[in-house]
Length: 211
Image 1: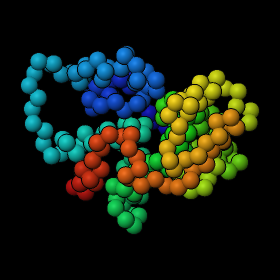
Image 2: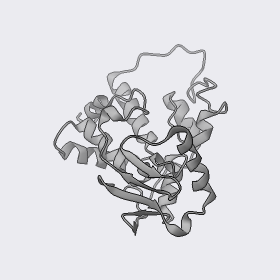
Image 3: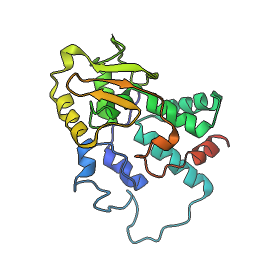
Image 4: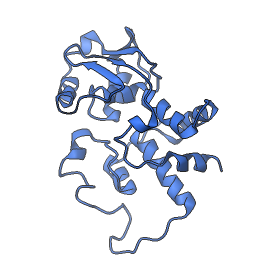
């Protein structure tokens, strides 16, 4: 499975936005966005040029794709699936992305980043409705129960990640028992419920793929 292996902070600098790719580091003073570092390859003294419509649409797609840690082919497949679903394509896309198992594991505070959540899933530490699932792109359904596998509940990385639950809780469409390391995906969120991704303009992504 192809994946990006370069410096992830470079991706945030490219988008000039916190993509939350390194967990706690993104909230620290070490974050390059907090330091207001320029985009890679750019002369900080150069005057910014005006982007074309295509350039603006591309940046929106790249931001969303990178936030969820997906490669281009996989992201385009998710978009095609969203397009075939009834309703608004952009909202359908967000619903599908939020249903990914690696994203749900991250949202439930079992990991400090989506990339760490992906590794936890790949290594077989997660069960869905009592069955082990090791596919990060597995789509969780409403009322599914997600739990850390019994033999994995002693892992330090999961215990450390769960400390964030005491500070921030979980999203309203999730339910979590941190002591049991067990939670429930209550419902598929609506676009308006997903408030932590900033100003992603999904309509621009739809326009990009519609060309």
